[in-house]
Image 1 (cartoon, rainbow, N blue to C red):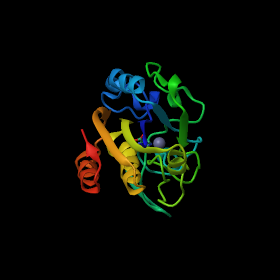
Image 2 (tube, protein in one colour):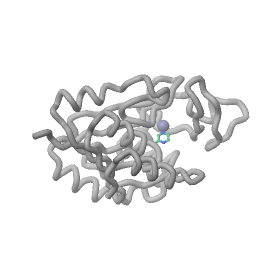
Image 3 (cartoon, helix red, strand yellow):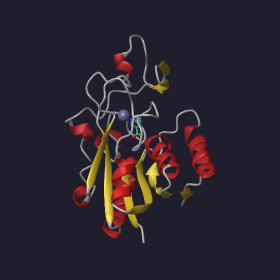
Length: 199
Ligand code: VGL
Ligand code: ZN
């Protein structure tokens, strides 16, 4: 029988209220996430982990503002406020998160020229993070995703997970969204169409 894993996406200070790219209510999910951590055999975490001057930061592009979109060699890229800089307090996991049980932390977005929403592939959709191989080698067949943000890192991770053949559930009550220009509705539709179980 394939094992279950819980993947907690980017539950970091910068995505919680008071952080550089705060997601509304981002900290409200912590009690539920901690319950799921307690009740799941294999727990993995992702950590958004950008070098200073990262290409996804508006501040790296003259005259650009956060939440504008630009064309990158790999396609459209939304620009963000500086966030989750390697080793900063903003990049730390929220102090309320019971992260100690985690077997693996997948860091992403650490190459300065490319962003990575998905836990499986960077935004060029070609560069793998190694997570799929890890899960397969560990005999994990079903994954549940929670964390931040529903319409970016959670959704892109869920879409890649089903594509890799993992039975994938997103606990929407364990996620909160950025919701930029209807992105939440768009990504919920994409997840549903792809066969992600939304609960
Ligand atoms: C995220 C925007 C930029 C996320 C990360 O975790 O959803 N969103 N970096
Ligand atoms: Zn980021």
